[in-house]
Image (cartoon, rainbow, N blue to C red):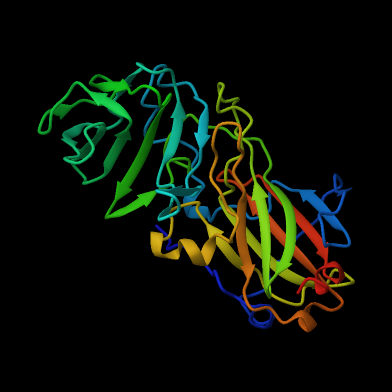
Length: 328
């Protein structure tokens, strides 16, 4: 599997020479929306071809099904891979290493691979099943009816029931010591997503360039976790001349299509003010686009940002940099 490419601290000066140019083609459904604060204008363009995953990850069939019945039907996912996770009054910060599948409390949770059961010694409601190829599927917030050492059979063995009051099972996949995105092509399925992520704002604060992004869930999530955002899988940016000609290559801010960074990268990825979802308090997905930027390098430029999900649905947004200079 390809290694994740991430750049968290690229300045505008570095971005002028970073990476090879990636061409982009606008579609006929381009629209101009109201500009976010401190920008002159922003254009958002939907294009399903933009920022597609590499060919190696565009595998149509899925290799395992859902851990709750019906196994062959897509279920609502209320939190995506890579979402920010902040706990213990901010002392614990990490990237969400799985997906949260909504289901009522008490719902039976089934093994999705065949293998040996392991129950976390410090978290009695965390169950893992390790397959013969050392792939591990784990299920959190599940009251177990199995014990460590038991053999689980995929889609036949009930591991336990969703613990009250969580209303979801956190599902993770791990291989060779790293967590993988269950919603990538060829993993959990069936899964379809036809929504488009959004670029909500671009701001210059304290010499840094910050972007706020969001995506929506492909299926409605039950109350009270309804209408809350999720995190796009890929965020990239580059500079354009006023004419639209690229003057820098694409720089990757985050790429969660396959895996996630270590928790030590959290503060270099998420900008101040980033929050996770809470009931009736939508999360704010604010990222460092560039650090220690040179405001003069933005003069006469347009900042183009591309965001996409694990299925390649993408939006491009263009911001006239003149509106950022006063804040830089």
